[in-house]
Amino acid sequence: MARYTVRIEVWLREGLVDPEGRTVSEALSGLGFPVRSARAGRIYEISVDAPGAEEAVSMAEGMCRELLANPVRDSCRVEVIGRRDPSRRPRSPPE
Image 1 (cartoon, rainbow, N blue to C red):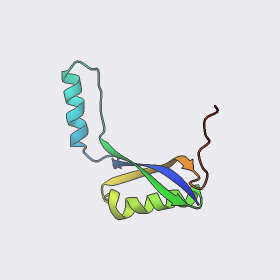
Image 2: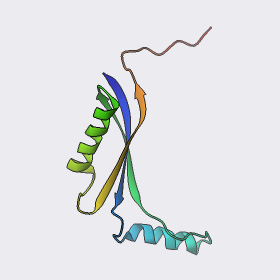
Image 3: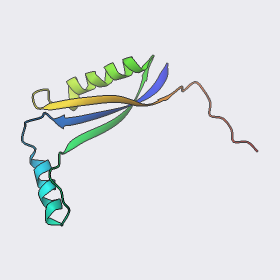
Image 4: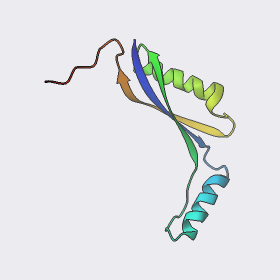
């Protein structure tokens, strides 16, 4: 079994008011940045042990459904960003 790192992004669904994003946009504009809009979201990077990338994604989607996102207002994006085989030892640097 390999260890996968999955990135889970949780965003408000399109069309819903994003007060945090609006506040950030207004504050940045007030500081002189030419910001037209901003969205606020959450990003999680989680390591899981799984037999394959598809299973790692499936686990992450389950995490979204059960804890990380509110299905009424949030949408999730999941991607595998890393893989490591914990049974392999790292190589020693050459001497």
